[in-house]
Amino acid sequence: MSKFKLAMIVALCAAVVVPAFTRTPQAPASSSAASAPDPKLPDSKLPDPKLPDPKLPDAKLVEDLVYANRILSDQVVVDAFGHVSERDDKDPNRFLLARSVAPALVTKADILEFDRNGEPIDARGRAVYLERFIHAAIYRARPDVKAIVHSHSPAVIPFGVTGTILRPIYHMSAFLGAGAPVFEIRNGAGMTNMMITDNKLGDALAKSLGDGTVVLMRGHGSVAVGDSILQVVHRAIYTEVNARLQAEAARLGSINFLTPEEAAKADAQTDSMASISRPWELWKSRIGKID
Ligand code: MN
Image (cartoon, rainbow, N blue to C red; front, side, top):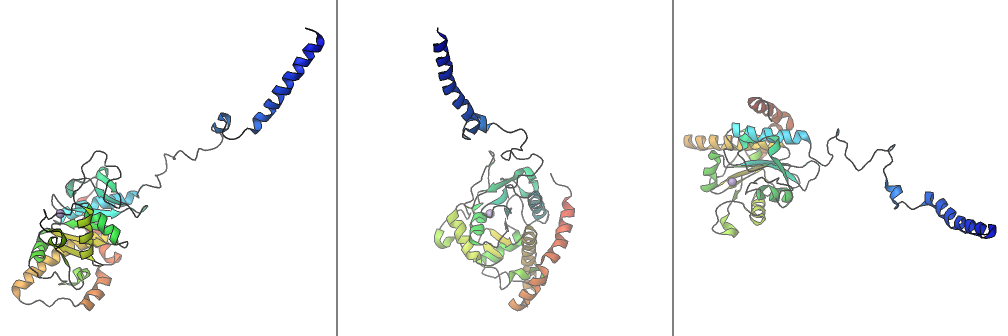
């Protein structure tokens, strides 16, 4: 090969290779070199294992819900049946409820998350409560409601089947106001197994509750709602106490109930956070440590 030809080949190679090489550092971000992680920069896509997941509900919320389950059982508002839920503090379209288990046995690991239609986000293979639609429907209908208790607490049952209205007999149950409405499942649904097993029945129940605090379910039980887990536990317990006292008083004579005005005034005191935290601490102390 002559010196001239060799010089021409070297010059041609340089013309092709050098511009290609000099472009490489300005290559678009889609190149494999550009997507490689920079070891000097933290990777924002990976969660910091030391920090709680910001999308998960607050750990205190889960703990309070476990206590609520145990307290309601200890206070004989729920037995093997009945449940308590709390709206998710991070996503108002979701709520927390235990898997299908007796409330006295609920641990933190049993708490599942449900969507606004009452379907579990991830049931992790667990069975879920048939009547979870009670919770879903009320959370949909009542943005102010943050916690719900459904129970079959025994002293309340007679008031759902006799037409005798459950009314506040003393200041501690002033949240009953002018009296608890009764949900009649036969209206609209006819002959059923009495349970709220779908969203249609749930919506009908939520309609009977209206803007109230407690609704009775004829031949079944009751539902209490509240703006916190503490308030709903307080209301569920004192609904049962009121029912017991009202039935006892009725045997003695005609009852002088709180008027709606007295109920409103008493409720501002007895249903306040300042008032309901005292029994909550007492009821919690009976449970002790939880898992
Ligand atoms: Mn039930």
